[in-house]
Amino acid sequence: MTPPFKVLRLGYRKGRDPRITTHLALVSRALGATDFLLAGDEDDGLFDNVASVNERFGGRMNCEHIGGGLGWLKRFSTQDAGDGEPGVTVHLTMYGEPYRSVIPRIRRDRPITLVVGGAKVPSDVFQHAHYNVAVGNQPHSEVAALALFMEAWFGEGGSERHFPDARLIIEPSARGKAVHDMDRHDDGEE
Image 1 (cartoon, one colour):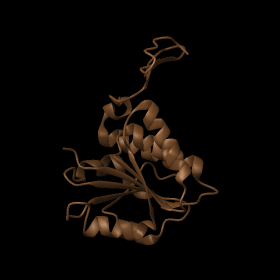
Image 2 (cartoon, one colour; image 1 turned 90 degrees about the vertical axis):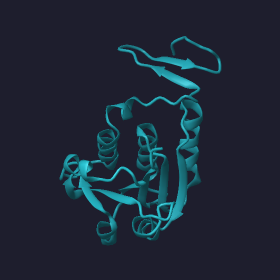
Image 3 (tube, helix red, strand yellow; image 1 turned 30 degrees about the vertical axis):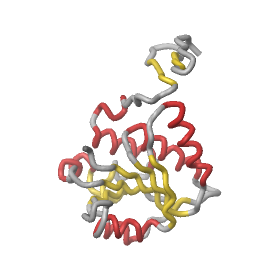
Image 4 (cartoon, one colour; image 1 turned 60 degrees about the horizontal axis):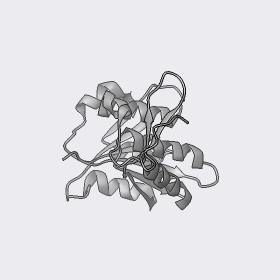
């Protein structure tokens, strides 16, 4: 069995960050994360969006609000990742080492938490992370960094993931939109 792959969003601000955080959750879900953890302000509406996508397109990524993320991260990376042993913490930051050179060194037999920061990442995160990795050392979108890291971690199949419980299935097409509704047994185009 593959160990859990969690994405932890730090510093969420309800009034300012819902769109980017929703995108982080959707990328996490689509590319293979088992859990999306939200640290910062509580926002159940954000999880409703992900649940709606799960219902329509399949998959069962767990979403959870954990309040303050630093305490959770310390426990995960030093004491308990769910089975009494520490997990592996990977922090996405433009100040880290190149992700392609770091990924081969990361243990794959332990639960992983990929940390995606918010407006200001506490310096303790850099200290508690087992790996501080960068997808480029220029300012850029955390959504892009998350997608590139996960594609490299899970391989090419990560972006071609299909869920067996999907109600809606997108058929790749060079032109137009082909959406199959499995509840209606609809093979028409939309």
